[in-house]
Length: 256
Image 1 (cartoon, helix red, strand yellow):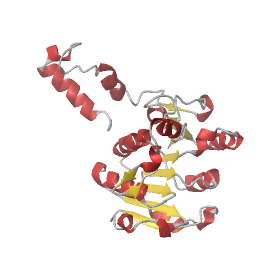
Image 2: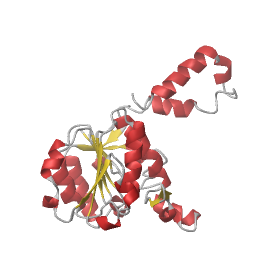
Image 3: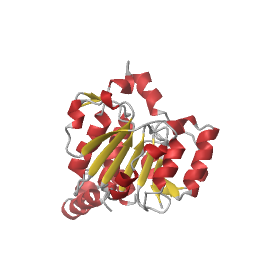
Image 4: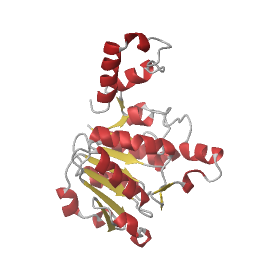
């Protein structure tokens, strides 16, 4: 498993060469047994859950927690000087998924200043053995900073996402898989999901940020559609820091 190989190598080397130091209190123990075991078994059978089997409870909602403990919260985060509207938890989770999935295409819905697209492109270039393409879609692309536009893996598209027919079908058909789709546009989220699902294949990921936290009737009905479309929640990501401690509660979705 992609996530586990480093932990597995450490485990084997430490037990083979320094078994005494792996005992409780040893210099190499570091209370790591539970963490190592968790990663080594990350692909266990109950990792993936149907949306209908999950509650909408969250241990904490990261946006609220972030603002309680700091003066300005996540709104002050930057990446290479550009605005990056992601919670600390999700900034830790996305690189893990990019490493595991090795996406050939990342689609970002909602560009803002381009900071998150730049961050995704840099992560892809570092973490992927065969880096692909990042495409970011927004209506207000004049706000995208020139420093983000310069990245060789990153392309911005001016698109009104309120109508799915505005998306370029020819572009989507040519993009290689696996895909990682991040919807941070907050516009017609389930209409866009239904449309993009026509291009997704088994193993692709679709993440819906922010909106699922509302857990209103529109969201609950929409996730019935998600489940009927063959998507499962990857609880390895939604629950990594506690139940649904992410800006995308119940919405780290993998196509079966």
